[in-house]
Length: 366
Image (tube, rainbow, N blue to C red; front, side, top):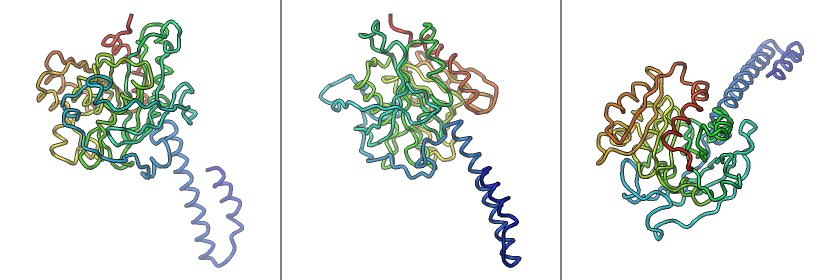
């Protein structure tokens, strides 16, 4: 931006030609300065919050849905059953895939975060997955130990880097894990921006469109189990999210109690249509089926899931109360009222506390 202003000042008095030409030339300089100013502000905001991971995400040109295969009903989302990835009949399990990992090319993301490009064998979704390993993972004293896992879901639009770069989840939790105040969780953040920047897949399997639920609850966990010393039991897995990702965390944990023991929602919502770009919110049946209150009320058995739901009044708090009112044991719901805007500054400050709560649900193994 300073360069564009300097160029305009330098050329302003040097424009030659008829008066209309001089006026148009100077107007063009002003417009150019305005465009560069807006672009600079956008880049600064994006860099601070990691809303878009790359230009493809911003322009909506990335293609992350390779195919939309029909997922067997026994494995589908929305409350259906199915074996936990890594369990069940081994003959039905997809072959193990050893992934190649590399660093994340983003100065805001700590260099101990790893990245891999995963081709979802069941979902037909392709996307990056970021993984952070707790400090105990490479400690010789823990060489025979398996570790609990938390999937981290960003908002919409959002980048798989946001939890690490903006919310600083690994930087905040690392010392707490070393002090024994937080369990040594493996932190996994998969891509959720699958249909461009104007359509939210809603972490849902939408026939003919995308298998976002299957990507998050089967392909990503299976990759983690294939490549790391992760515990396969659903009692040792959780999912956390903020904003649209908070809706996903609540919904996925309730719909898949055979895959997750706990869910953390930071400023989420129940009605998928709350997100105006939600593909799920535009379909009446999907909208109702993917409302966490509906999932709780219609479950054949109350899911054994612990939920931590936080939000300001008018921004997730009442939604949490509605789930708590509908829930029955063994489902537990802790609703925490917060203050402040719908922003990463609020969620970042909550990270230590919510992970200490999660440690009370999924403690470190002795």
